Length: 116
Image (cartoon, rainbow, N blue to C red; front, side, top):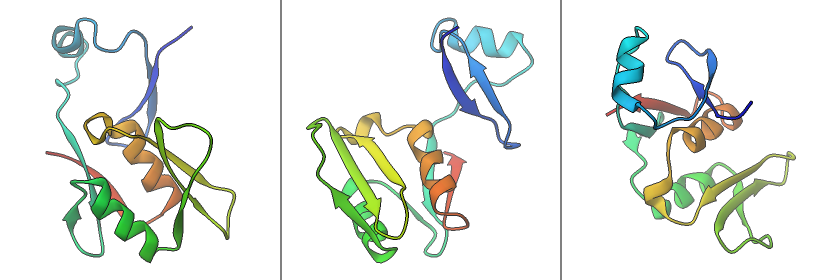
């Protein structure tokens, strides 16, 4: 079994096998809606995270630090007070909802993922 775990708006996770194949048709036929572009919102400021520069500043203010691990394709952050590590693709265009929900889980009440 392979696929991608997707968070639904009601907080339930669902395994989507072969995401992208029959993208619009498959979802409409199953009673769902077509996917919309998601954005990460920093709740205290209401700002949409539109770049890694902005995200870097927000995370530093929250106590996160850049982590320079061995993988040059990742942009990573860790918090000294926890074992949490956030790993992101170097290319911001690949920053999708899977990565966004990692922020929601590791920073409760500070981030939210919304449809654009």
